[in-house]
Image 1 (cartoon, helix red, strand yellow):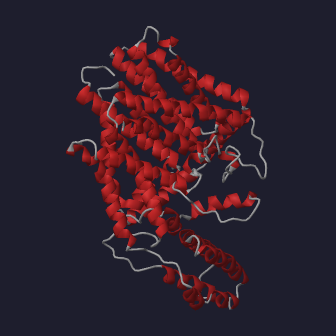
Image 2 (cartoon, helix red, strand yellow; image 1 turned 90 degrees about the vertical axis):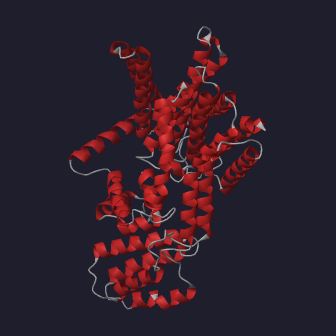
Image 3 (cartoon, one colour; image 1 turned 30 degrees about the vertical axis):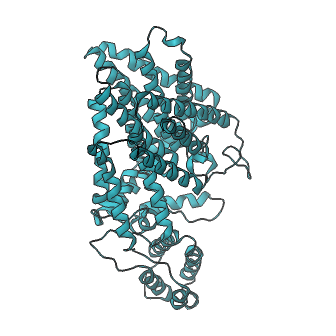
Length: 534
């Protein structure tokens, strides 16, 4: 049975990583679910697990109960053909005296109707976007289009049961998306229960580290030789990307690549520490050590080369803190001894940026210019879009803090709470757009706030159990390997404050796995290997 953990677990991560970081199709999600179920089935039928560890299931069980209840308490509905006819869109637009109002309504309701069947959640977002734009531009004076907008809102909004959790729509697609989300989290729990030995954990993270280093190398070569083209499939010549400027390697978004790379770097560092503790005398003569160093170098270079400013800041600031933390434990407050490791990390940062600027100056220039523009705008009182999005979603959360708005509700619900400042800033992109589009906000750029708005305090609160375990391993763990692994997970959580890495399946999966193996490594050391320094 241990061959499962030795081969199938890392193989799953490899497949998901290479296949557009998990966005290559629904088959990815079904594969993750199947493997997770299989591991759990084999594990729970082959060994006795302490009842105390079943606490790991509690957060998942709670959100499953909340989702089940919310499915029968939807906030919106999609209109039937009969209701569309009763709405009288064409008649209202034809009777409108104000031509500008009629034109906006015609374009807006054409899009709403177009997606009402195939993507009703997007259709809801389009309606509230239309309403916002309409109310920003026109005075409401009981005209035919004014009444049409009010009437449509009454048609799609449902009366909900206030003391039950809600869902935007009663749709099977929400069930599928929720099940996939749960299994990505459950994967880490399954790995925790399944693995029995420290060696198996190290084998898994070794394979994943090598895989990350290889993808980083190919991503670097890809970046250096990339030439944009209209019909070009950017990712391995197989898949295209929503925005070719922002992809890297198999990831559609550079920040999400950076997040994946950071976790993988700390996996490799954990193995390097283990190899050093095991045999420091012949350390640099080991092929494994050499390959791991090359892996770390490739991954470090790939982060700034991808153009990710946030990733560059997080990896090097975390490395400085990491070196200071472990050096302080070793030198017991001798601050002079701490300067050397800290300066070595800063020197590594300078060298990495230099290498990137040497081979791809355009990327470093863009990062520097964007940072300057953002700082100058902030000093002038024009805050970054993300800060305004966070302000909007906080208002949204405060209106329903206990139960939230339901799983994956942000895109549909957010336009109702979107501030005019956000709309104005998003509309700026239309000035230079090559084609007409609706500038909707898909994500809050903060996974913490977004999940809090979806699940509320009742659903989000129990996940503090995982956070407590993560912090406990960092502060009280008996194994350096588990503490280093958990630093990668903490970096992911920090990244989640400023972005949405969990929306890329590969990231949520590797985070889940990393937490699972770090907790299990520490658990095995405490219970079976307490006399060893591992």
